[in-house]
Amino acid sequence: MYVLAVLAAIFVTTRLWESRGGRRDLVYEVALVGFPAGLIGGRLYFVLTSWNEVPDHWWGPFAIWQGGLGIWGGIAGGVLGGLWVLRRRQANIPAFLDAAAPGLLVAQAIGRIGNWFNQELFGGPTSLPWGLRISPDHRPDGYLQYTTFHPTFLYELIWNLLLATALIWLWRRRTVKAPGIFALYVAGYSLARVGEELLRIDPAHHILGMRLNFWVACIVCLAALAWFARIQWGWRRAPRVAALLAGAVVLSTTGCGNGSRAGQPVAPTGATTAPVHSASLWASTSNTVLPSPPAAHTRPSSSSA
Image (cartoon, rainbow, N blue to C red; front, top):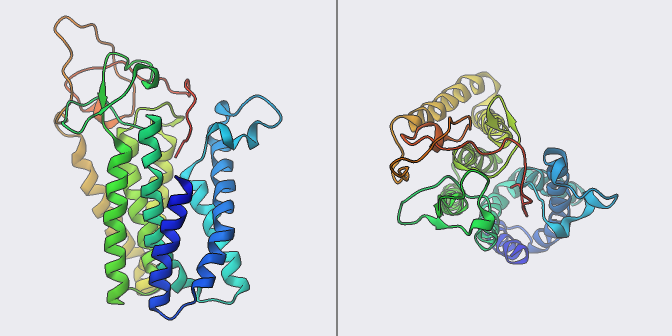
């Protein structure tokens, strides 16, 4: 799946880069360095944030064949590797970042298909028609009585493709100053992860009652919005515009917790329920009180992305 994702990213980036007179050889060179750098960055992020899942051997931190990659570290590592190549070739870095942004989203969307095969990184129980059937062996503790769950990786896949389409449209209009499209990629993807982290129930480390990656996504989203405002309007107007954009994002998500969630399964009559201490949005807004998932990792996962 990784190979297919990389090929898709190369294809999309090459088409966009060549449309502005760039050389495709540069895309190949960036991919040759960026892909392994992304793997290293993804593994480092996983080791630092999910240390209890690392095999207890000297080679544990390097055991990538046993799974464990963090998307945030993967993006950071890949971008840093690509920037190293671009600086050596004295290329137009802002323009190349904009050309690469849609391709990265397509690659991330393809990578999410693997979560379906592995039955991992899904959300809370649901009775919606598109609910994903999860085998008992892959259900987190406290959710063994449910069979269908929110396919959060599918939600991300769809969002990534829609966002990639929007960024390509902006690229062709030439109305956004470079690397504004890349900043929108970072902000848009992070915004989607905020919602996704509120739905997911797989074991994770928590800070102030919320999943670690929820806070990471919030910080990255706000930073990217500020970066985009600075690129487009300069330092003087950037704080005001960034604050307005951040406020719009907050307002768009505050209403998500009102009322019960559609498709939420109802506890059977006479069922024994326990108080909820989870930060998961679906659980905190439901009329049905469900057992709390564990706050720490209890089941190995092939990815923490």
